[in-house]
Length: 357
View (cartoon, rainbow, N blue to C red):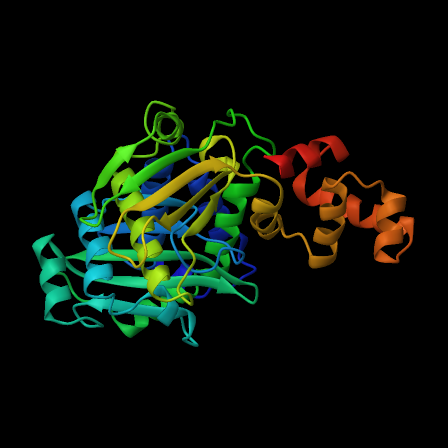
């Protein structure tokens, strides 16, 4: 099977089809992670997998959704904290600047003795990382682990995993667009979580607890509960980094409706000057201008189509949009037909409801 996978390209429907089927697995991100690991393991053998979904509008930061297989929760927490305190030897921003966006961290690759010791303390020798991107920007990050004592990842395996980019990108977008177009879960009041300077959750508002019941176990979405704490802490650390350097990734992300039944906006903000105080994390329903950039990315909506959607969301009729954009009403309707086809919306009302969140 390795030989079959090693020569595929962007047009190979077999691999893309298999990965699309994997992310649609019943049972949620853990079941999907196991299926993804099995498929990718035929190309690059590994012991654990993570696949994190991004979108160009949000840039490089925490993922909007993710799939996991055999990544130990304690290792995730340790890496999140280590990246802030000591620095990641190969951050995603570095991968984004590379002509070939792969790297190995740990044995056989990047990292100092401290990183190798951290990995070894969790039974890991190294991680192969792949930034999934196209001309529009980043769409995801794939991480593959090998257990301590295993052969290090090498250049040939980096080459093989790069060949997976078109199929992985297709699968990530298919996961989002195959989900519900409009919300199936309620829009709850804004919730607040406070993370202290010791990187622990200090308080959770009742509204945030309601969001957490929607996002984490008990909802039937299969999201493992251990993701929650590293997620909040990771977002707070990004908020602290952004407070130090405004060029750093903004601690804001928008999850698709495929994840939790509705689009959710999560963002962090330091409550004190500097980055050594509490950080507030706000959770709210995403809609309108907060959702539109990510929505357009996921559904492949062009810049001109987006301008029409903005006017449509504001209540303008096609003739009014045509006058505002100095185009014909026929052109506006053609663009709307294109958007309906991409989103599978049955008409204007459903499309506006989707954008409204």
